[in-house]
Length: 322
Image 1 (tube, rainbow, N blue to C red):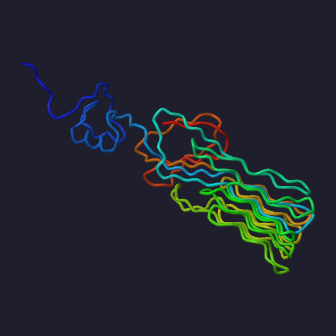
Image 2 (image 1 turned 135 degrees about the vertical axis):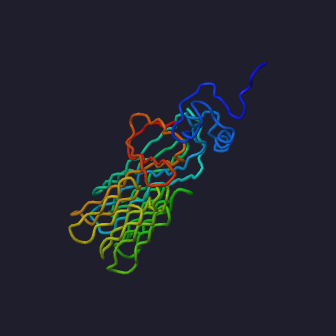
Image 3 (image 1 turned 120 degrees about the vertical axis):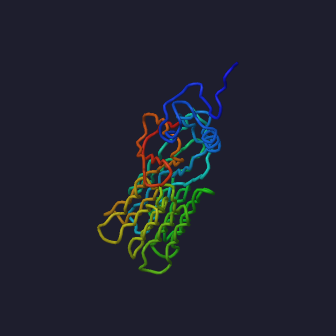
């Protein structure tokens, strides 16, 4: 007569109980209650070697645009890098997903426009780099469009660059009658226009957006401030740089790994700020094992969010898979 083992499940390849499975009766033996719990948690049939997550939370921010500088007082701030976030992004086990961290855009110098910030990427999520701010000299051109648009220059009333829908907002419009530049757009709001009143500072950068993906509410993708004949504006929350005032100070750089736009410069004796570099942050339940991260990426594993593993990628290009 054949004897049957009742009441438990024996795996084909027994493994020693560990981690979430350390309460099992013996190596490779799982009670029906345990098996049911693991099935409900999408962790069966691989006890001891937990399956990959089916979805992850993702925040992707591109590099911010640089602020403008020339021989005039009325330059625009850089636009913030585009921001995309997804609280349930589908992933497939043993599949590589590309990550790229966009660099911040360089500041313009006298009579020279510079480029936008660079795009960041996680798989199909690719926000655009922020637009650079407009210069106010005779050779100045319009502010650039991007994830968020750069701020326009004053006096000649140059319009701000446009933002990309779902990623950011437009830069403000420069003053039509005063030497006052506008702020660059942010992920949460457009940049402020240049004032039409003499002696006012440049327009403030647009505010960014707050995310709690790391476990703490943090702003990202704030616009850089514009410069005016009454001083420099204030960068938007989320890493936007302040503009130079009417002394010897220079525009502030956008904060690294926020996608903040650079602050505008003031006349020839100051410089504008560069855009802040972008960032990619990924969070997933800590019941799953750590991913494999390819060479070329600079990252930090954060422990500040209860119940989740959080990875913050701050530079480079590479891949990740579970």
